[in-house]
Length: 334
Ligand code: NAI
Image 1 (cartoon, rainbow, N blue to C red):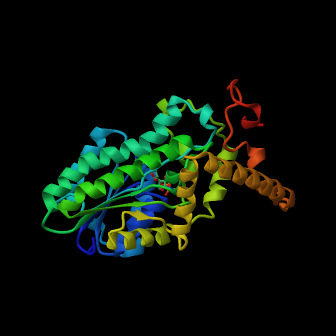
Image 2 (cartoon, rainbow, N blue to C red):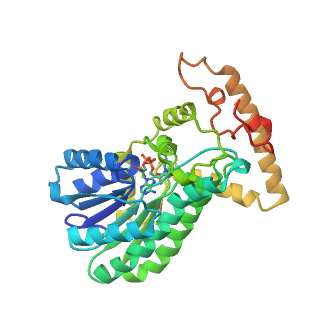
Image 3 (spheres, rainbow, N blue to C red):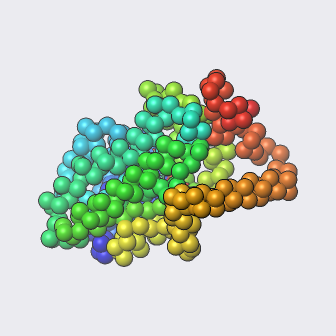
C-alpha cells in the first residue's frame, strides 16, 4: 500500500502505546482513523492526542469501545466504521495486546485464555470479520493492507512468557499465510515485531477481566511498577509507527524495527537450527553456561540501585504464586 491520504484506517489498541503512535502517524498522513480499545477513558484521551498531533478534524477520528475477544462487539465495531466512514478500512492494523510474566509451569487456564485470547484469538476475529469486507469493497479498485503488531518474542520460547510467545508466533504464522492468500486480491500483509516499546503494557494486569483473574504468577503493585520501568526504556511509538509505515509501503511481510534486524533474526533462527541436532544442542548448552556466567559477573558489578528503584529479584517479578506447591521454590515469589 503506497497511498494513505483520504483512506480509512482501523487500529486496534489505538488508545495507548504502539497503537496510539500508529493512529497519530496515519492521521497525519491524511487518513480517517478509527481506533478500537477496551478502555473508554484511554480512548477519550487518545482522540484528543491524535487530533492535537495531526490537526485532523473531529469527524476524521473515530473512537470505538470494543472488547476484541467478544465477536459480537467486534462485528458491531466493523459495522460502526462502515456507517461513519462509508466503508471498511483500507488499512487494518491489529495492535491491541496484553502481557503477563511467570514460569510456564505455573501458568493457569486463565493466563492462557487471557494472553492468547487478546494476542491471538482477537487477531483471528479481526481477520475473519474484516478481510471479506475489504476484498468486497476494494479488491481490484485500490490498494489496501492488513497488519499486526506481534513481537520479537514470536521467534523464540521464553520460560517466563510462554502464552505470549506462543500467541505471537501464531500471529506471525497467520500473517505469512494471509500474505500468500491476499496477494491475488491486491491486499498486502505485514507483521511488526518490536522488542521493547515505551508503552503502558506493564499495566495490563490492572484491567485483566474479572473472570480470568486466577493467575499462577506473582502479580503485585511492585511487579507492575518494575515492568513499567522496563518499558519506559523502550522505543518511542511514533518511531515504531514510522518503521511500520515504511514496511507497508515496501510491501514487506515482516518488519523488525532495528538497523541490525538481519543479525537479530539470524541469531533466533540459528537457535532453531541448533535445536535440531546433537551438535546444535551442545552449542546451546555452552551458550547457556556462558550466559549464566556473564549474568553472575554482571550482577556482581551492578551499581547499587538508587533508593526506591525497583529491583527484579526483590519484587518477585516473573515468579510463581507462592502457594503452587509443585513449582521449584527458587521460581516462587520471595
Ligand atoms: P499498551 O498497553 O500501551 O496498548 C495496548 C492497548 O490494547 C491498550 O490500550 C489496551 O486497552 C488495549 N487492549 C487490551 N486488551 C484489549 C481487548 N480485549 N480489547 C480491546 N483492546 C484491548 O501496550 P503496547 O505495548 O503499546 O502494546 C501494543 C502491541 O505491541 C501489543 O500487541 C504488544 O504485545 C506488542 N508489543 C509490545 C512490546 C512492548 O515492549 N511494550 C514489545 C513487543 C510487542
